[in-house]
Length: 199
Ligand code: ADP
Image 1 (tube, rainbow, N blue to C red):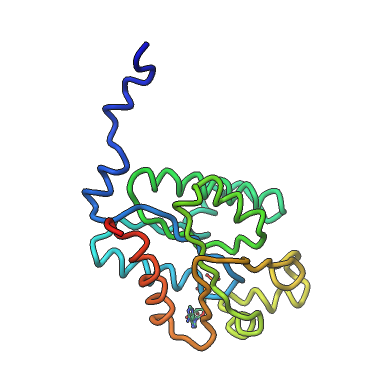
Image 2 (image 1 turned 45 degrees about the vertical axis):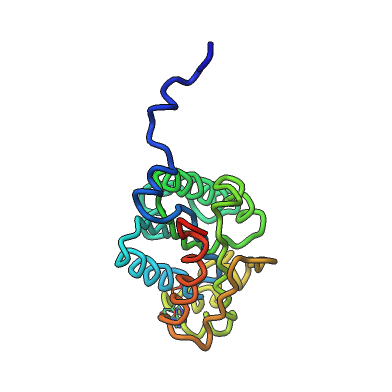
């Protein structure tokens, strides 16, 4: 009984994967209102890291809500289950050595704290895409604010469902007077130091 998990010595370790990739793994968790810029920034960051040959993965509503979480709606309970599955998925990718970009409104501190606990505090980098409601509403990328104001969508974050801003995010990104490139550049700069192999 010297080793109860003999296979453990044989499986490829995260540290081996990180050494091969040339960077550390981790999760960049972008939170903010609808239209704040999460998906746009995440896509730009993904492109930049991919160009630098990083193993990078983007999780957002588009690729999660259709399959993995296709059975879930937008009740508080479903929102929690949605984030729980996403966080577990992100954790698997971290074990595989990836830099994971998660782009989700994730409106409450409780929900984000659950994600952080699942992923592990050391691997969780919270980015607050800090765009005022007025700016998000003026952008109204998907026409959702107009519908929410008209009462056609109930429980819309920022209108009739609360958004709790992070208290001490890893990065507080104020996008209102910034180009997409500048916002993405700020994220890349911040995580480049944190996720570099040597620090
Ligand atoms: P979210 O994913 O948070 O719902 P989106 O990324 O879909 O938001 O939409 C954000 C919109 O705001 C896009 O049309 C984008 O071009 C625009 N935008 C303007 N400035 C910025 C910025 N600095 N960062 C991100 N998006 C910006």
